Length: 635
Image (cartoon, rainbow, N blue to C red; front, side, top):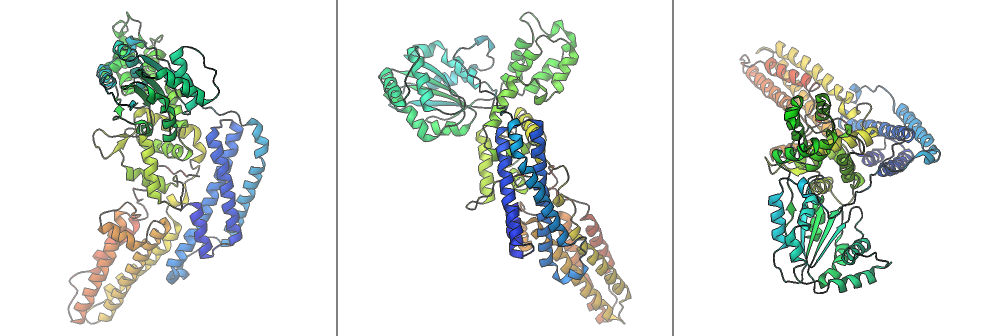
């Protein structure tokens, strides 16, 4: 449950005073606002980060206490029949005192906020690098087919009034800008278009600034207009009946209204005008779309190797002159995973280095081990900083997946939900929001469809490294410093086990004493087996309520329909239930035989042994769906 859901549950169950619960809720909302603000600023000052850590730990402690109250309330509803058997290790008053103590600690920490304002520091968001239309053709490898495909789209003789948009979409560092530069400088483009202009957008999609840059690119003069209207009027006149090519490089986001406003003067150009858009975000391409998206793919290992060698060695040099580097160069290229930016950056890092140990160090290094001004790291961090807060947490959490792990949409959404990373919304289901989060990360090229299984997704190695970097750097205070109580074996389940052990001992004793002359003992054994089954079902109901996912019978229906996404039970739980049911059947048969003066052909002890094994195993085996990832908590 989320904190607000737990509070609502406790208010309804009357386990705590409403005044105290409302105070807790208000405090959590206030603290979360502070933490959200800190996340947006990406503050790295050690004093402030330690303060934030302490604040977050207090929220975790409150969550634990609220869960403790909620579990006790849920347990009391299910276990009224066994209330005398349930031991409480502490009183509710102790928990209330602890809650008051944590709230006081939070108040003291909040009072320190003003004193820390002066040392917060500036955000560490890197500047978005500007690009130009100039390109070094000798630095392009393996893009001949891509160049021809884009050229074919540009040279198609459309004479309608619609300005065609060619969207190039791909991963960070895959070479979208380089491809656009290569096409922009092709002699065929120069012959086809009367006007060519290059605008590096980056950051915010500012219609005024883009229009101004376009006009300045045409005239070659600085524009002094302060308003959009005269800008667009002059641009319209300049484009009138002239065929143009405009490249909008590195668009991060755009809405339909802004795009329509930008296009108004462009519609006055001659038919066949084209716009090339490069972006990491497929959603941008969908807004600007007039023709299908061109998805740029990774380079082959051979092309990547050629590019790497060009930057790692002098033109006359190769690994043949440095036998100690043989093999290391190929392994480093495989590490690039087809991204030219990585190949160039690693090549430049190793350009003056011929020590095999240094090459091996680069081979074994992670993205965050590279220099902080590395173009790879800077470019990747821009992808992360452009995410809204809720997506930052969800993306960073995926660092806990193994490298190149394939996953489904449903699997990831379920994990996000379990870790409370999806912001609650009164009007929408959690699964629906999770699907939207997931699609957002897909459209931003942070998740990719698996080439082996179209229904699965995977993170590129570089994005996986990015997730691990931000997880360690910015989310360390969201990682539990102690295991969450929900991830350990709940002490509240022991009354069920102790009760069943006692019943099993009595059942076996009466089963041994039963005979054709004493069938009444067999009747007692059959009654005890029914009690065992009842306790077993009660424990499963308690588990369902504790997980707050569904009732036992809803989960049973879910299982019968083949959908187990919300199943909080292990195979051992179900086998234990089956064994308990088997005891009822076998002990009932024994009673019938003994009433007829015959010996029981089946001994209850065989089924009892199976049930006891399940009972013990259930405390040792975790649900695999809950044990996949380390515990983190959302805000």
